[in-house]
Image 1 (cartoon, rainbow, N blue to C red):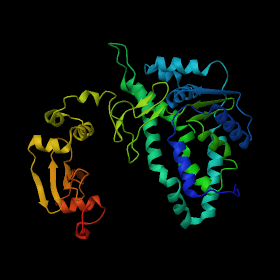
Image 2: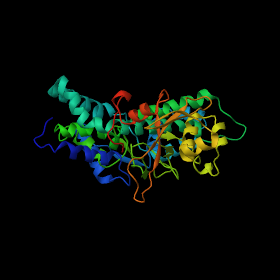
Image 3: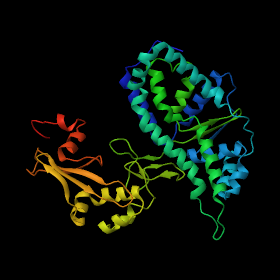
Image 4: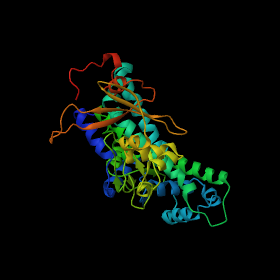
Length: 383
């Protein structure tokens, strides 16, 4: 359904970016009003109960129980998770899922209408200027959260001397991930909602869904009950938008459900703090290639090069090309360059820039960092 008022695209995208990565308590009244509007647009009565949970992990556990998977969770040793889900759920009936009515069908109808209206040439351009600007970062976050919800089946402590068969835990992990897949993503539906708003399509059947997305996290709709999750209490990202934090969780919810990451790479909760006194030998002996890369970045490429006696692959007027051979992993190749612009104190800063492992010359490495071929890299002045 089209409306007559459409804001400028960059304002629309900016607002939905803020919603997608927003933190802090949900606006519960506004979110519940949005749910009621979404049910009404689908021709349904508003749910009788609004169950708020502190994280999508708790919501997925309740959804798994409602789907009849309680015994599978118990068989995997997840008694505490199951007990919490039953406590959250209480005594009232939920009824069947109405996800298809509330979200799937109206969403697909609006998308099909918008695509038809735009045509095959304009549609991808419109997406690239709106939702496409948010998609990769938001979808990466959603995938990480879903995977972490499933990983609860493996991460929970077992009684000493009572290991459970891997298949039972893997089944529980799969069921929890499936429950997460059945959620309406709330704030993380931002990319598509940015597209729909830019086309004037948020005042019709999708208005309620958009209102919840502006106000809360993930949610699960049923005939008589809706489960709504709080937004994160903390979210830390680096400049490219990846989850990143060295002194705590990069993403955290009020109940302690959290993700730890360094430059987007998953790390154990205590990994960075365990690196006090890190040495080149410890880096070289680390078997996990991803953790080794994190250790290298924290330790410093230049320091590692000096302490391991690495030799340059190539040097020319643009810089020096170095390679670090790592056991069981591709080499870390970087180009050493000196900034042509002096710092305020007059010093010239040296940088080490990661380049593809197949790089053969310093010029090719520097050219790659500028997104051009080696033959085309002929700067009048380097900056």
